[in-house]
Image (cartoon, rainbow, N blue to C red):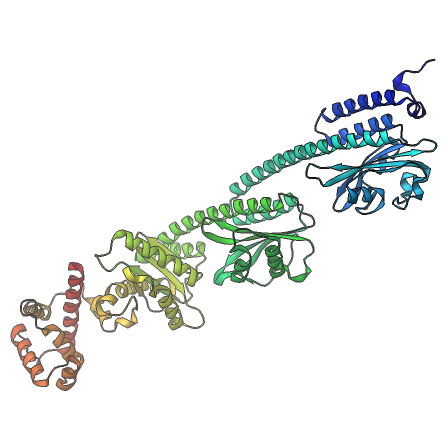
Length: 600
């Protein structure tokens, strides 16, 4: 029976005249083009090309190698060797394929292939059977070698130059197919990755608590990156980084200095591999094996921490994925903190209002303190910040109050703070150093930004009743301190005798005050410091010489002024009750200073 053209053997094909062979070569090239354009699946394309090349050249076997990580990897082979795909590997510079890759040109061995020094023996491929061999490079558009096509023939078949030319044409078509397939695979992979990131972002945004959010972010990030290790660090007090979650879990490590890490890695426009290795050494020491990657947790201008991963071989989009997960996590964390802050703010408001209300239930107050994580019986100081002067605008007062609150939360961790418009109330825990050291901390925290605020600090308080009294003491210190020149931060103890004045002045009206008001009116008309002179004279216990020195005047001038005081106010200083008179002087002086500031 006559055989058709398609059923010819390798020997028949080899015996064809050149013009008939060129016709078959063109036909197979058309079929290769059809195979390449049939779809994006690279594996299907490569196996189709292997089959067509085998038919066109009459070879024993066809092998297509790709270069991956500086090694040749068998990607597609004739059916009898297809089980070796992905398993046969050798160095990029080894064998005839290595020579082709180095020289960027084809190699053609007509006979006795194994005797050629460029050929390496691969037992799995039964290369002892091969007589003739052709290898051609698969060149990308950039001119780089992406792989090699090799065809082997056993004796007595020998390849001809036309076979090499056909393979070179095929390799050129394969290079285009590889690039198109890789583009398709890359696009498909990116779409799949974006879908996973979208689902993760939805789950991260829906997290109801940090306990739910942190494991989700770390575990899912590790899965997305196929990472060996993924860890999330949070910024705690005193600019320290603390490990909050790790996958796989491991024991707690020492807190890290945030300033060193942030300056080394994140104070530049873009993270580099060198910076990532600096971060890895800070985080894990010299024992980290793999490629490290780090991304900051930043929401707006707020630094929350960082996300770090260790990957064996990162994909091209790995750093972008890590940054995206870090960004979603940071936004979710800030949202949770805002929700928690609002919840705490409402609860703190109720707690302070209950403290200020003498009719509030003691058990209710203690229950609110428990929900706030606040120990009522521990030693505390009550702090109150108020705007003392009408000359400042509301915007200025709000801005200063914002800065005071931020500084208090940062410098005094664990304090309980409530802000109502431009008035700030806080309860600060007194540690081992004592109340004096805590007051020094408050002075440092409030000294600079308190230009439009007056800060009062109570005496040491234990328990609900003392805390309630502490609110009143802080209020007195905040309002009276600036009037008597005590500075931006005044403790209740520093009010001295004025504590008794403010405690008893409300609703009190006596003859001494009425007479002293005459001195105030006289001063307003004549400009003579009679009230201040009387105040200093009483402070010096009636000693004329000391009073004169304190007032920078001659003793006779002082005696004349004292006589004028007695005449204007209707006083007899030798017979007056000096304690009552001194208290009355302070009440009138305080009232006068308050009026002067209000008018200013």
